[in-house]
Image (cartoon, rainbow, N blue to C red; front, side):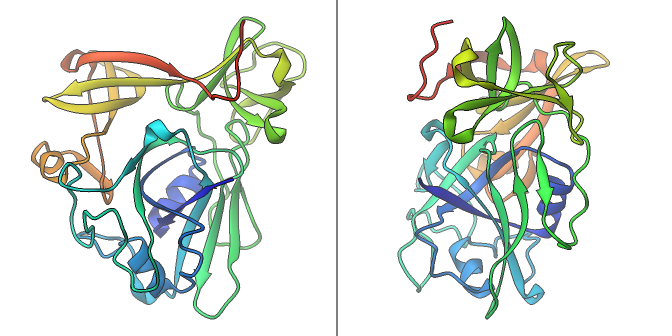
Length: 295
């Protein structure tokens, strides 16, 4: 099983774990390729953390990394120019600028965090410290020991990003668990069906066998705005109608900055716009090759 590794700064850690969020995006490397990056200095180079406006601090003495199973390949892109434009230390070659080894660099469009993701703290000359574990969409994060991270709070997951399961003709946010033998169902309110229990995240959960599921899929909602490509990651009701949260999938920092998009991380740009302003909305369903549901 292959795992990606992504560096997270303290603000991102608190937002992700303390906020009990369940999506990830940005530059990543294969954790196996970076196994010899064992110090914060190494990780600064491997993950290219010295970009303009960075929130990482070399003097902190540690770097936190998120390790998670590789999502569907449709979300993963080779970070290679000239189509992919970003700021130094991004090289555009598809590889990290690190003397310690050859490490390919990828970019991950925003997607749901796979169950079992782990957050680790790496210091020079010390064992890696496990900070938190992401269980699945209904339960969210669990914090290990005295990591200094806030206790994960209540958070309603997006009904657009992430996996969904059809069970007894109802649609639930869901994740595969028990090595693919079970499905964890998540509801944002009490579904009124026996067997569900409420979690500290504010969801209602129930585990069912994979054979009980009628369908299992992930939505891919895309659109264009101002002539650039985006993924729709959430929908809300504004004062004057629906608004979309958009994740920029053009992978061009020049165009993203010209549009005035919000920058959450190196290469990660987003905005919120009225639904009436977007064009070419398309919605598809991604499926896992290993699963086939007939309904």
